[in-house]
Amino acid sequence: MSTKKSDRRTEILQALAAMLESSPGARITTAALAKEVGVSEAALYRHFPSKAKMFEGLIEFIEETLFSRIHRIIQDESDVTARLEMILTLTLGFAEQNPGMCRLLTGDALAGETERLRVRIAQLFDRIETQLRQVIREADLKQSLRPVMGTMPCANYLLALLEGKIRQYVRTEYKTKPLQAWSEQWEAIAPTLMAGRS
Image (cartoon, rainbow, N blue to C red; front, side, top):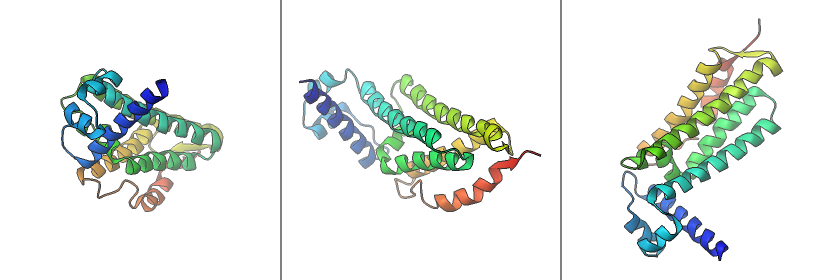
């Protein structure tokens, strides 16, 4: 019984993500979502007490996917520049593969929704920035490297780059992909981030 219930929950979240992707700029109603899933609105509410909880389910999926992989990168890769590149590439790749989720990440789909959801997205980006800061801080200890512009500004610069590419993806209705020209861009940026300790 519980497996069937969790399958239905997953189905609802997948349908919501698909609708976010296929209707850029449109507000998703529970009536339209119920129709997409092929259930009544009452059935939707048996699985999720509110639309906010459905959005929270998607945000949880984003968090679990990204942070479990970021944790693995930090464990498996010791070189600081490679770590930064892998974290950024992972996040941009996730965004590219999940266009509907990008509307949540940019807040585009959250207009008129509860403030709690916008706070949760802000916290997600704060966590990414904290991870970047942690990696940059370790550069000095492990490789005698220092960020040219300081730890906080460097992490914030990389986060702004991420957010900008995700926002551009949504703004262009998924035409300009986050990983487009990324390897060339990183090749140009990477050498400017760190300097050896003098």
